[in-house]
Image 1 (tube, rainbow, N blue to C red):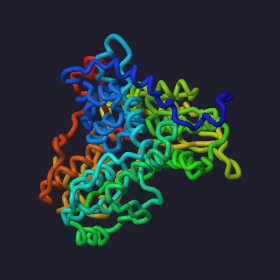
Image 2 (image 1 turned 45 degrees about the vertical axis):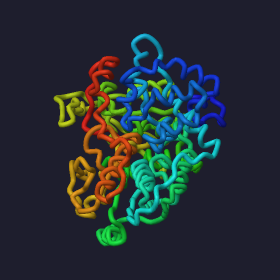
Image 3 (image 1 turned 135 degrees about the horizontal axis):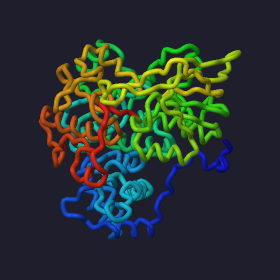
Amino acid sequence: MEDARPPQLSFQELLPPMTPHEATVEANRCLYCYDAPCLHACPTHIDIPTFIRKIATGNVSGAAHTILESNFLGGTCARVCPVQELCEGACVYNAHDKPIQIGRLQRFATDHLHARGEAPFTPAPPTGRRVAVVGSGPAGLSASAELAKQGHAVTLYEKRELGGGLSTYGIIVLREPVEVALREVDAVRDLGVQVVTGQELNSPAGLDELLAANDAVVLSVGLGAVPALGIPGEAHILSGLDVIEASKLERPTGVGTRAVVIGAGNTAIDAATIARRAGADTTMVYRRTEREMTAYHHEYLFALSEGIGFSFLTQPVEVLHENGQVTGLRCVRMGLGAPDTSGRARPEPIPGSDFVIPCDTVISAIGQEKPALAVTLGLDLDQGYIRVDDELRTSLPRVYAGGDCIRARGNASTVMAVQDGKLIAASLARILGTQAAPIAPTRPPEVRDHPLYQAAHGAVPHAEAQHG
């Protein structure tokens, strides 16, 4: 399949920035609803009507301040949030017209503030208390920023070369360029947070050292690698996470001319998008049907619009190769049986249905392994994830956790991780004797359970956990 798209456009942000005129026109469509449903649908509770009203009246910097007060990673979330499932999904316009483009307006405001070089916050006077944050992904950055704003001395540890975690390495450029993620790391530094890269917590002794030097430790360690499939020829499979990372850092992705992506979650679609935009004829294989996919429906539609093919009810059983080069993926047809523990129909192989999909690249994106560090540190677990209470305290004294590593239930997403960081900072404010955030954050409900969301979209069942 030929891609007629000019190469220079293949890996740019998918949506262009709004012009000031476009932003003003769009902002003036907002009805400034009483008890606005978009505000309730945002897990970080950004005052969306107020920031949009500020854009409409020309106070764009003020709009950015309103956003960042509730969500320090407002620039990232403007680009990567599933707005169709959250704020825009709850917009009252859905019943009769196009919803307000809240995500693009948020991007317009936060980019405006960055372009002017304005620092939105200053740290409070030093409290003399110290906190170590392990992992510089969205939860770690959010917790670090909120703690620094309270006046605590924060050291943020990152095992990799660059800070930003998932935003830097795991979100495709079409949604978020690396520089957007890194400027949020710089914003945390500007608050006085010490960012230490190339340093990993990997032992109980390491945790003891951090606890000895700090009043509390926050774990924001994400998840592990893509799990193994356990099929012959697996050594020739590329990791979807590695493909995405290589594309973000402008390194060779290893994708050839005909790619098969295993999986049907949001990360699988991202990996397939990279392969497709690199020029490969790309097919996604999934052992269930479209109905059971964990990817958001709008992501599925996006993949179709990109020219990505799908082979449902298909289970890979062997990677075929010759002289180190992949030549095909052997699969079997599947049928659906009774529901399994996730509530989805259990896929069952159909005997004698083997077939081969010719390809030169196989990419696996079937999820991520549970956080191995939790076991290493002896933390209590919940379905393999770090167990926390409502204050986001782990089973170890003075150790808190947030982000994907605690997401045993519900959707794993950047905006939920940002809210975790706020919750941790609010919990620690009570422990460390400092002023909590002006409005104490509450743990967000599942948006798909919200009556307004269901009124617009109908009841939507959700699986145990959806990552990516």
